[in-house]
Image 1 (tube, one colour):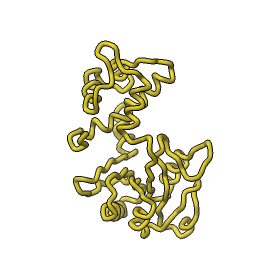
Image 2: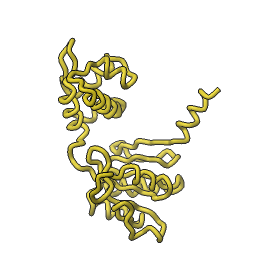
Image 3: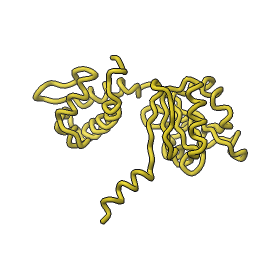
Length: 214
């Protein structure tokens, strides 16, 4: 499978299909149809089938998809069966909320995100936080980011730093070889074409929803 030929919009829909299939499986659906997946995700059945065809033939025409098999295949495609270590830059209110939201309530060291995505390190500039542990996750000075990325084998960086510092953080990530970044800072970041940056902006989402309040 050549990742370069798969549109990013398709990849971003795969977790939706996974969540939908898991939901149907919990409700004892052995088979889930493209129509059901489409209803759950808000997409057409044709779009669902087209998206999944990028990765192989998982279902049977006129029957649908074996729910458990589809879940297993999507896990493999998204590489969710293996542990992926994540670095979080910025431990203000948002960073703290992200860590505590994803903490494994069953215990264990570190902050474990669903499907073995693991927040392994936090980076900040506040002297009162550096050297401490937050929910089992060590906090380092942001100046250590580049070295710690290599040392800890971090694969994804989440940027929850102030907007005026976010690009500098992005530059450090690029220099350290990071290829995947989730940006919560309210600013567009510049990165090479081979670095995938996804942005999440709560303010923009709320502003768009305000349109519907009248």
